[in-house]
Image (cartoon, rainbow, N blue to C red; front, side):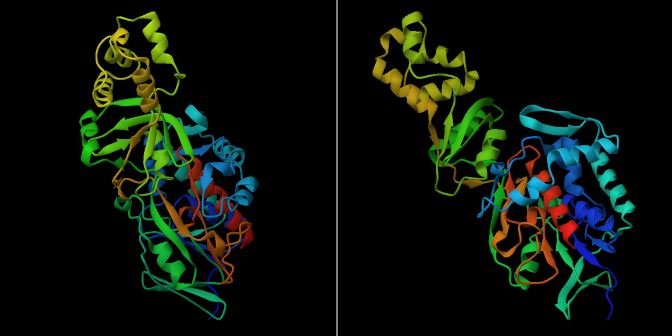
Length: 391
């Protein structure tokens, strides 16, 4: 049976669309298949509908994986500047927000339209609303059964993402398919996800809606951004960031006053001895949070009446407040999936599976996870281009 295409890509998300456009514009006959009825569904909801499409600081150390070196090759060969140039060619206005994050001025729909236009330039055939029924491999050809049709190609790209945000139709299909072909999986888990609190820490949930800038730590990794208390626990950018590094049973350390240096309470006592400790905290933190922290620390009254040793102890606690999350809000609230198809199975240059000729895996399906703020899109673009240039 002759091949009907040069390449079949499963998944019309960020990585799949980019890979299809890249390969199609190289003259490859590309079929892009997705069970969803429209392309780029996660692109459309990202960045509050404005798509945080990359980050100017997308260096390899902003990504984590069982192999921290794996992402270097693809990221170095397709950079944020390359994607910005593509956006500019399509006349899409954009702006930089905090920490190098780039967003469309208008709508995320512009990014999807751009990718669809790039696919059209490469004469990519796109089949939407077509669940994959079966994938087999024999005689050098992949056979994909979809919508009562069997399509064949010598190359197949897995670009179906991870199970984060299942309401958008996300599943673990990529892992099932990888296992079918004998590829190992690094256990998938929710990443960039709110953490939940229970037990003795449940009282912090009464602060729901309170946000403040903190330094949050999990293990050796720390992020200085806003933290938000929710009715379930902790969220906000700082918490989402450390969630990717957090493991069950570990504490999360919070420095509630990251701009303060050691001895600040003693200095305040000298300068303003009649000031109450609670008032001192309220001047630097939201009032409700300051009250809860002061109660937990157990210091009340004027600074003049509080021993220096107790003030120093309060400083230490505020600089490394230990929360003990009992879990996360799961894949339903996770922006991405950590873990996935093991990088040990893939070429870092081409994203090709070492054991199965013609098989590739890209994007979120692979065990490479970026920080919050456009990094995961940059990995999608870079890994997609690596595969698209190799097939």
